[in-house]
Amino acid sequence: MKRGLLIVSLGLLIASVFLAVLIADPYARSATHYKAKSVCSEVFVAGRDPDDVLARDFDRIHPAVSRTSVELDEAAGIVRGSLLGVLGRAEAVHRPGYGCALAIDGRPVGDVRDRPEVTPSSWPVAIDPDIQALAERFRTSANADVTADIRAVLVVQYGRIIAEDYADGFGPDMPMQSWSMAKSVTQALTAIALDRGLLSLSDSDLMPGWTGDDPRADITVADLLHMADGLDFGEDYGDPASDVTRMLFGSRHMGLSAAQSPSAHAPGTHWAYSSGTTNILSAVLRRAVEASGEDYHDWPYEVLFGPLGMTTPVFETDAGGTFIGSSYLYASPRDWARLGQLYLNDGTWNGRRILPESAVDFAVTPLLPDEAPFYGAHWWLNAALPDGRPRLPGLPDDAYFMGGHDVQRVIVIPSKNAVIVRLGMTRPPVDDDRDVMPGLAAIVDAL
Image (cartoon, rainbow, N blue to C red; front, side, top):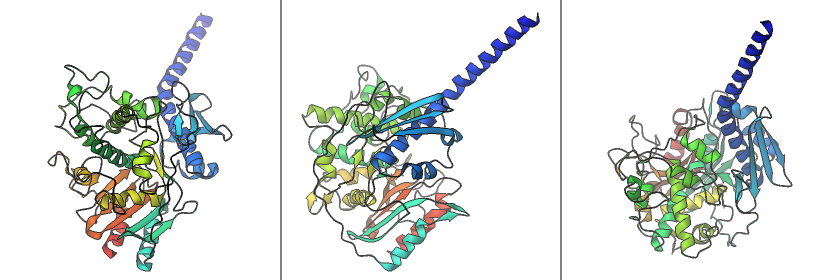
C-alpha cells in the first residue's frame, strides 16, 4: 500500500514538474531568444563590450530576461542563451553585412556580405552653446535616482548639427538599434519601389494563401502602409504566446508568420498598430525587388542609404533572409539624423530627389483621421491620442516622428526647420511624458 502511494505521489510530482516546464518554457523561450539576439547585435553590430551590454541593457524588464544566461563564441560570432541551463535554448548568429539573426529551423541565410561602397557625406557642425547645454541636461533626465538612460541626443537645424551629446560608451558613429523606427524606413523603401514601378499602392493578393474569396486577398499595399489591413495580429510583448513574440522570436520567415493572422476587419476600415503588418510589407517588397532582377540585399543601400552618405546602417534579416522591416535596423545617431533630414527636405538630399514627391505627404496623412489621427503611413504624428494627450507633449503640432521601443525617436519639426534624434533605453519607473518630455520641449522652444 505504502509502495503504491509512493509510486502515485512520485508520478504526480513528475507530472507537475513536466507541466510546470511546459508552462514556463514559452516565457523562457521569449526571454532567451530576446536576450541572445540583443547581445549578438550589440556586440557584433554595434561593437560594444559584452560586459557593458549585460550590465546595462536588461534592467527593469521581465525577470526571466535577467535570469537568462548567455555565452558568447566571439570567434564564431554566436551567442547562446538559456534559462537555468535547460529552458528556452536560443542561438543568435552574426553574419557580417547581414547582422544577427536567431537560428530558427536551421542556420540563418547568409554568411558574409560586402555592402556597396558608400561615399561618406559629412554634416556641417555649428554647435550652439545654449542648445548644447539644454541637450546635455535633457540627456541626463531622471526620475529620482533612476536615469532615463538616454544614450544619444542630436539636434539639427537648417541642415547643421547645433548640439549633440552622448552617454559614456556611445558616440556619433556607433550603430544603434532602431526598434520600430525601422518601420518608417520601410515606408521610405516602399515609396522608392512605388516610384520605380516595382509596386503599386493598389496591388492586392499580396501573400501566399491570400487569394480567391479570402478577405485578405483585398488587402492592398496602401492598407499595409497605413496599418489598416484588418488582420487580427496581437502586439502584446508581455505574452510569450502572442503573435508578435512568436513572430520575432520563433519564426524563420516573419512576414509569412504574420500573414497567417486571420481577418478581423475589412481592409482600410480599422487601424491597429502591428509589427506583423510591416513584416508582411517587407516580404512583399522583397518579392517585388527580386522580380525586378535587383540584388535584394544590396537594394536599400543602393537606393536609400548610399545616396544619403550613410556609412553605418546594418539592416538585419530574419533567418530566411528578409529584412526585419518592423524592428531591426542599426545606424549611427548622425545617420538616423540624415533620414529625418531627408523627410524635412521633402524627400531630397543635397538637391537630389531620393523619395518621390508624394512620399512625405503620404507618410504624414492619416488614412482614418477620426479613428487614428496620430498615425500616417508608418510615421507617428503629433496629434491627440485616444486619452486626449498629444503624442509629443510640448512640441509643435506639425511635428512627426519615427518611434521605437524604449523611446527611440527621430523627430522632424518643419516649423522649426529641425530634426532631433534621441536614442537610448528609457523604461519605467521613468515616465517619458512626465520626466523627459519637458526637457525636450525646452530644447524645441529655444530653437
